[in-house]
Structures are given as C-alpha cells and as structure tokens.
Image (cartoon, rainbow, N blue to C red; front, side, top):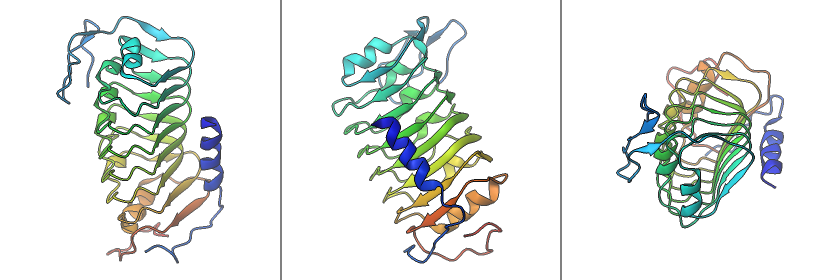
Length: 241
C-alpha cells in the first residue's frame, strides 16, 4: 500500500511537459553518544552503539521508538504511523534508512528534530497527513533521497525550512499543503533525477516554484505545476512555467 502510493506519486509526475497554470489560484559526538536536545525533549546521552537494524520497522507507539534507540541505520523500510507519539528524540542516532521512510498520520508530532542525524534515504521518503507538523527543521543533515520525496497534505506546514543540505532526489512531489508559503528549505537542491510535481498548495506563490526550477541543473522528467498561489514574478525566472 505504502510502496504503491510512492509509485502513484511518481506516476502522476510523469506528464512530459504538461505544465498547466490555468487553474493556479542534531549531531553525533565522537564517543558515539548524542546529547542533542534542541527540541527540549529528554534525548540526552543516547548510546549510539546498536549499529544497523536489519529489516523493516514500524512505529505505532512511543515504546516502539524506544526500541530503535541507539540504532544508526535501518536496512529496510521505516514507517512512523503513530497518532499518539509526540517525541522522536530517541531516533537521534539514526543516520540512514536503506528502504522507504514514511511519516504518515502522526497527529501530534510538531517537529522532526529527532531525525537530525539522518543523512540519506535509499528509496522513497514520504511525509503525508501530519496535521500538527509546521516545518521540516529536523532534517538539516539530509543530503539525498534515492527515489520520490513526497510532501503531501500537511495542513499546518508553513515552510520547508530544514533540509538545507539536500542536494539530490529522484522525483519531487509537493502537493496539497494548504498553509505552505515558501520552498526555502530546498535551497541546496540542484539535482532532480525524474519528475517535478508541485500543485494544490494554495498559499505557495508560483514564483517560489519558478525559483526552484531555476536552481535545478536540468532534469528529464515531466513537469506538473498548477493550483498554487498565482502571482507575478519580477523579474521572471528563466524556467517559470
């Protein structure tokens, strides 16, 4: 189901020039311990010596998060689908997910600070339907997402501030985030291996999308940009749809 959604997101992106604006209206210490606590949670002195967790792991409760404390990587998929969870700080050691990473339907999570050591996701990374999430500031170490990076239906998300080190993704989908006003967190993104789909973000000026397209070093996939906030770019970016 989750893998299928990533495929659907990627498939929607394959538009081959279907741009349409007509409707647009923390850190690890050298002794392998971490005492980063920028979010005020009790994540001090986590022992990062567990190494790799082999296989997939699904977080449905706060105790599941505690089970992963100390692991630095996951070989398979990681799903965080926990309406009752409020604190991701015990994931502070995690630097990589080999498969897909899903942050889905987490009702009370307001930030991603517990993922501040995460540098790479091997396959798709989906941030979907997290109603209390306001920004992505916990993703400051993330540099690459191998397949689709999908940010979808997060109604309180006002900015993407956070993944400022992200330089490459497979496909990029930013959809139906009604409060999103800018794409500033993607300032380092220069490599897009596939498709670009940014639509239904009613508060996101199209000029923000144009600026993002200008900073990319070209891509061969389809472009789908519509139903964002219509505005006038001055001067008009070269790649403005």
